[in-house]
Length: 483
Image (cartoon, rainbow, N blue to C red; front, side, top):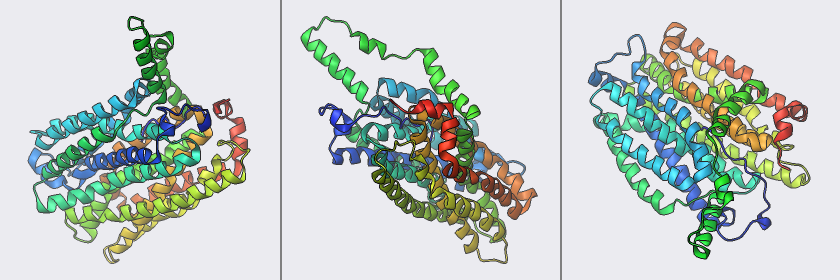
């Protein structure tokens, strides 16, 4: 979930031209585009973690070993590193030049890159192609934020689409090992990719039929060019169109310097990046820890341990319904306080994240760790995983919504910092899982993550308590609100 562009200049719907503006699309058209792109987020997530349930056959095929280091995780790590880096460069270009072609080309590239993953003759090819495939998938996933912002006006209007998006993204990467486990148990491991190619091929046709340009400034420029061409075919592009181009220096500032500045100087961005990154990283570290815990303690086969990941999915679905309740609470707050801005009400977004973080994420980690004993039923640590899935979903959505509302026009840069941290944690935190769970025992390895989550869980509590004071002292938050 990189580079959120949910923050657009505030515009009242009745001030917008009726023709062509995505804000004024029919609700059915908005939902068709939204649900299609949300499904794409879910589907490409299967590619991220699907092979997590096949470490042994992959190791045997490519003559690698996990004895001293989880080398079989490198294909997943390279995917998430690509998802962290590539969107930072591509999404600003899509924002300037249009979403449609950037989205379609990214999907095409992703689809093509699944082919060498399926037939990779060596391990290096698998790792390298997954880096670029993950980069294209990251554009599809993280570009979803901007699509929602382009077609759903207002913080309340965006709430449900963002909830569906976050849940779909998390369920996709969490369900990957479950999907991979079913395939590996019945077929050769390369069928993980062959089946994905079928899914992505059918979805590609749907994307071509459904996807439309959602950037209103881009649509305006196209309308203006067509009008100018009809009136004076020999005329050159107008100055407004030329002014829309962004210089490389400005692009570098927006995509790297400003997000880094926010991360280093804004405590809210810093601590929320850590909390959200830890939450997302826990989803990926479970692809390693669950296999170790359940194969060692309960003599599960690798594919059976992959099926246990469904516990996380159950928790994430429950988290989706909890987010709906939080959305309703926020909608009620906006109606009760019509004269307060989105930034002034942004702390309402965090109410449910407090118990979700303390009880769901932190409590789930402790419960998962300290029930991971051979003499206890296997269902107990699985219940702990469900708590974790619940906490992760609620926390990550709350952070996304809060950053968007509180930082307004700086939300894209603030979210870029948060989401870069999420993907980097997802890439490298699981690489430490094998040594952690071997040397520290299952209980204490998980407890370390739980203690970190416990400390970070105070971040949303402090913001709910001292939100107005913190916003008043933040230079970016003070300047962020649109006139």
